[in-house]
Length: 66
Image (cartoon, rainbow, N blue to C red):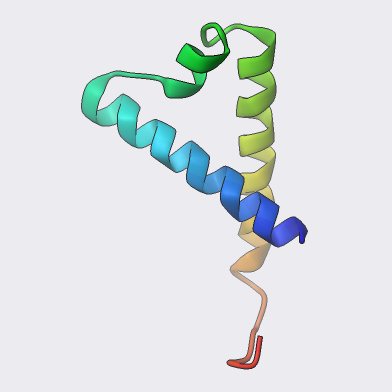
């Protein structure tokens, strides 16, 4: 379950970076009151921790049954 939540957060972060790169638009900051707003910073922190967690997924060996 942690892996799936982490993956979802990483995807959200990647999409946010895509929007920043293409259009200069930070959707997380826009929705939660700016980049320095407390809620935005919490989201950014959670996405960062999720990214760190996803590093461990590189080293998990899975089978086709999973």
